[in-house]
Length: 257
Ligand SMILES: N[C@@H](CCC(=O)N[C@@H](CS)C(=O)NCC(=O)O)C(=O)O
Image 1 (tube, rainbow, N blue to C red):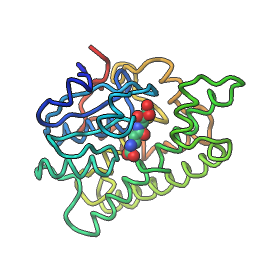
Image 2 (cartoon, rainbow, N blue to C red):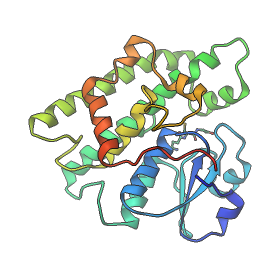
Image 3 (spheres, rainbow, N blue to C red):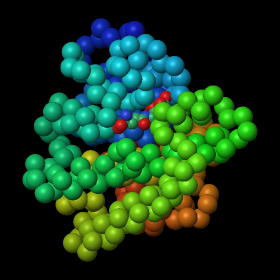
Image 4 (tube, rainbow, N blue to C red):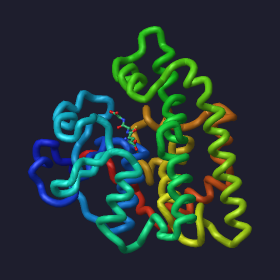
């Protein structure tokens, strides 16, 4: 993927999507998959994972990725705002149903996966732990730990939250299968399916041909302890695999050209 700089992006037209360059960040990959499914084109802009990202801070008021900036709309960096922007830019191929109760389900399940304190956040607390438990943790890990609320206490409770969310999603998929659906909500693909497919990689990344992530990241993302590994139940793994077969193109494209 060819990433443009923030300086180049500021005056560019259309949709600009800030992404962590060189790695498949789950929030960024979910945003990319959603925009691709809805056939919304964007210009990729470079964020440096864990870096200072001073120009990004000046432009968008924060330093994480993804961030979407459409024309002169305000920048959006929260998963919910990114999703709503995608729905607003294209009314076709809806990923958030109009029906109110299905809408509540899609947004609720998505928040469990991608929201603050959700699956991705809890798993990140675990992923940072081996570095932050060192006598002299690397600066980048210290910075990310502060940014995303790592402490020995939050790390210790992460597994309980991961297990609770995994059990809820697995149970939901069982009930869905009983009504003849392969999707998290209703009978068609929604945003909730896209979030799960992308965040499942924080337990078991796709193989190197589909996901050419750096080795250090593959090691960090691959769950090794049994309790965490079991959060990817056979049903949830099968759901993830179906999403890549049907709705998300492979190989993932994030390496810098
Ligand atoms: N702001 C997003 C979450 C984005 C997020 O957590 N981004 C992480 C992905 S691991 C990131 O950019 N980390 C690297 C950094 O902060 O430099 C949301 O609330 O939906």
